[in-house]
Image 1: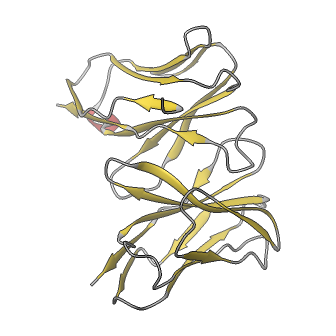
Image 2: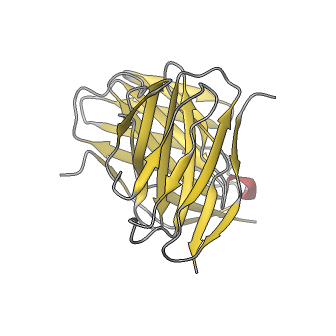
Length: 113
Length: 110
């Protein structure tokens, strides 16, 4: 079983839809959970992060962590064409400064106008 | 503006040549990383460095070398021993948690 599993998509939705992106993981020691957004031919940028369980909201984006199920989600409300990108989840037991930030393979999202 | 600068953006290499990818950061971050990104394979760690003059191999270090002589700089050399070097290379840095990435270098073997 891989440490982090993420559906690669592609996921295509109409503008204005609610998008749900998900990752599952196997290591119960993970405490730091992040979502990165990567536009084509660019480097990933940190979008959201959470520590331990719970929800975090930032504008149209909500990150959820369910440690009991080893499942994290990113919700995008009122999706826009500018949200079209690949979304990578990432997680670690200590923040990742020792080269141990584990990434999912990314889900490619396309929001159609 | 603080950030990570990778250069060049595109690089072409002939078979048998060594090439060096540049990565410079002005974020005063201690740790720096090199990743390789291939379609369908996600991000794979090549090397990382937590302090100057020290670095560790990642999951796919064979055929690559690095140096960390200055805090701001972490160049990656792709040697002729790397059999399949065509890929998108990403440099990152971090302070406490989460990484800041550069814009990447796309290397193509011709």
